Length: 363
Length: 227
Image 1 (cartoon, one colour):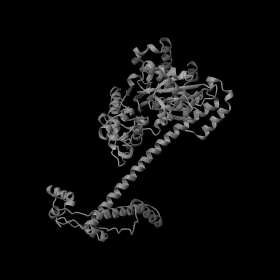
Image 2 (tube, chains in turn brown, purple):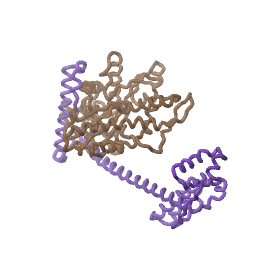
Image 3 (cartoon, one colour):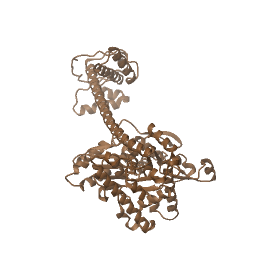
Image 4 (spheres, chains in turn red, cyan):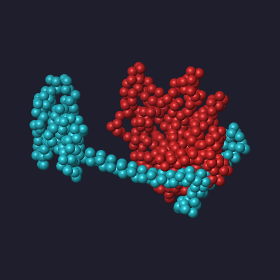
């Protein structure tokens, strides 16, 4: 969002930057650290989403072509032929925490570059602090949360707090009680029930069958059924994002793939629908788990307010499919957010803004 | 030409005839076969009729209605709308012929306007179906727009609040932006509690990190879940 008024204010803020004195004038940011894409929303009214990927030029020639030693974000995907690419997050967690040796160090550096890019996206003036609330998967380990804090601080973010991603979404919507948030990402699907208090471990579920699994499944089905076509995972991901649906529609997923080097239009509607449809039972199971372990007197309340966010929420027909799945539990109401990509980062920003200043000072 | 004789005489239309036989095997005695071009013509007329019916419900001037119908027919039917069809108030119903006759394609194309009573009836049924379908489609679009407007209104409210807070942050330089006395809402006390719990959890995380070092935490990482 770049509202005119906000834009004007941020310019004014830039003008008076010499008066800034560190923490009291800190830029607050909310970050949704995603396996595939990371979103940032700032108190200056800026918001941005970037691919969570880092690339290094393969050789001196490509280094000269790109003019940078390291590239971060969508530029890496666009120029990946000349780059060594690295995704610093896997299944919602910083991947280096689960690796060893040289690979660990490479992944750690990639994570650091990603945080540095996010820090730059905050557009803080010189000498101005940045305070960030960062969303992590619902069931992220303590080790991973500590790694997030360490890397973020190393990247120059002065104050860091980590929060469960679905909780951030709930906070953005003021849905702090009688609600359930389902955040569908690439690495994980995070579910969290809100009962008016800070959600505990038993209030949250993380499902690892998420967007990346859907991509892999579509690739698998295509290899089985159309061995003649050539494709990359990135092509499949783009096709999925454009055509994903869990219901029969007249719209066909016609995608151009090379067949023996010749561009050919291929109908992959069935493969996408099958792979995406496999998500629904996992989500319904997760909801069932959180509902069935809740106070029986209030179970109907959280069933009646299931909020779905994240890039995966844009699957056509998902709302109806989930409501149908909830019929076995006595029915429920599902709401798909209209701005799912930034809901987490907006909630994190809201937390950062409403967090008392003395807390930030202590951090 | 009967269905039976067609089987032996015309191999090129075997698929069509087999379908007729299948229907007869299932006990359907009365079958009427309609030529493809005739069917297309009927569908075009039914769509034109449906457009007319829908247009009649609109509260607009006659000139606008005619212009609307003309454009709709041109776009939807993908061609010159031609003369508007006459709506028959009460079609006479007549049973189909006992034995199916495959109409000659050329004959049908030569005289597309000469439709029998059966075709007229089918035409009306078809136009009703199309009108019904369009009405339900319109209703779906209206509902979807309404829910979208509701969501956008909620979002505007949310953004307006966020803007107000951001405005204060930017003008007051990040100081505690809201006067506690002016922001009292039913949930605010609970929110303060939540923020405090979140802060304490992060402080605990930092303390553990500082005392143990990053490399020695994998053993208890599972129990370290928190919000």
